[in-house]
Image (cartoon, rainbow, N blue to C red):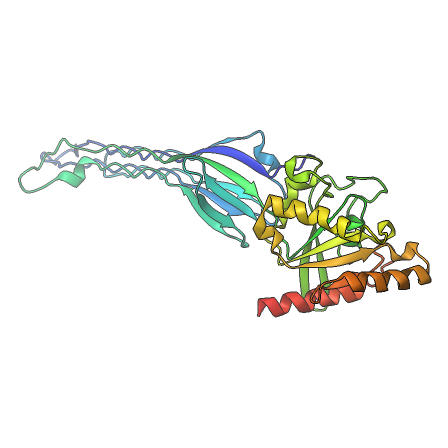
Amino acid sequence: MKFVDSVTIHVSAGNGGNGCISFRREKFIPKGGPDGGDGGDGGNIWIISDLNMNSLTDYKIKKIFYAENGKNGSGSNSSGKKGKDTFIKVPLGTRIFNNENKSIISDIIYKNQKILIAKGGWHGLGNSRFKSSTNRTPRKKTNGTIGEYKIISLELILIADVGTLGLPNSGKSTLTSSLSNAKTKINNYPFTTLNPILGTVQIKKKKFIIADIPGIIQGASSGVGLGIKFLKHLSRCKLLLHIIDITTIKKKNINKIRSIILKELKNFNKSLFNIPRWLIFNKIDSLRKKKIIKLMVYIKKRMKKNQKYYLISAKKKIGTRKLSKDIIKYLYKKYI
């Protein structure tokens, strides 16, 4: 099923029911007074979080949502029934925009979060409400008001603590799968990952969520490839892991490999560029020990003073346990 992370929908809350004009007509009560009841309020439209959803696919086809109108009032001071509310379920990480002014209405980021998105109309008043000492037989009532109508956009931005970055075939999916419970498709060809994937990593009682997005290639910020489309899903991350295939490194191109991703990040969003990044040199199982030692010396000379980096094999799970523990330490210090 195709991953959908952006949709536009129309929502119409219910109209309020009208008030009633009625007079009490009963045997042996010749002067029955007004007894017209009020209408019912229109139903509201709510957006609520649903932990079982991970896409906005449901709303690619169904785009119009109504809440029920309130019922009209009736005699014997009977009020109309309130219209039923409508609930629109969305995955965690959904951002709601008002299409009219492009403002953000709310971010759905909590379990059981519930946002009133369109308010139902107010009920009309029956003629019993207008009885007074000077007007004992009022023939006045009010109609219910119209419920709110809005056009809103839903944009899913996945909630993850850690995000992976890298060129296609650098081993991002393998690393995500190795660290977490994510079931990723892993093959030796570019763009294996066609949709963002989330996984949970847990060590004892502490855990974090990791996001894997399609690989980024040169020119991605201009629309080339797939990765740039999903970069927004890393915007909530507290840490980014820049995965580099160590087998592609030659003495003159390590900075070139790094700069491809950094340039695309900067062109896409400066705030994303400023998220802390760790360098992860992957696939060390493909090299001989002497070659790894030489590369370690070479890499160390070219790292900035505070740049954190790791040499790992996601496939063989070499160094991945330490990486997970260090991520936990880093994140939980940030939370405090």
